[in-house]
Image 1 (cartoon, rainbow, N blue to C red):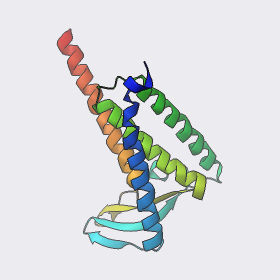
Image 2: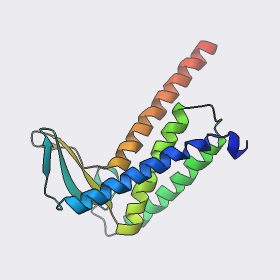
Image 3: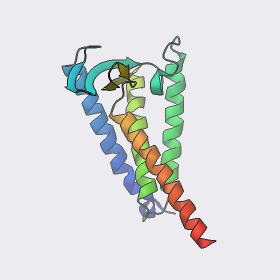
Image 4: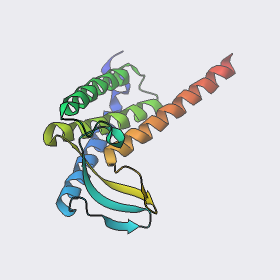
Amino acid sequence: MTAGRSALIWLWLAVAVFVVDIGTKLLAETLLTYGKPVYLLPVLDLTLLYNPGAAFSFLADQSGWQRWFFTAVSIGVSLMLIIWLKRLPRGQVLLPSALALILGGAVGNLFDRLVYGHVVDFISVHWDKSYFPAFNIADSAITVGAVMMALDVLREMKHEKKQA
């Protein structure tokens, strides 16, 4: 399959996620004070935080090796997603857009790890005194992309069941 007929056309979405992610992180670094919440809604505030670990601060308390481990994982996953997109037919929408969202988010957080040694988080959701781990636009894109992938799997299962 040639690149012109593949789903690589969806790379524009990955680039858009990356640009918005990096731009919002730059704004957060410029306008927010580290660890000081800025109230937006009763369940939402903006709080600049740094995460040297992975999702939900996994391995954040380690000595620094995790930076390079997660960097390698991000590069590997990003390459796999690009190859996957290249192999998908251009006419599909749900799966390639999901992969592009995940790719854009992965590259956004990869950029942070390479440049800063940690991921910049700033969106804080909470209920009363219970806080969800802070996150960013890249994390949101990865989550939405993963949900879309799950929906695509369910759609395919339903389609295969009808065919049987």
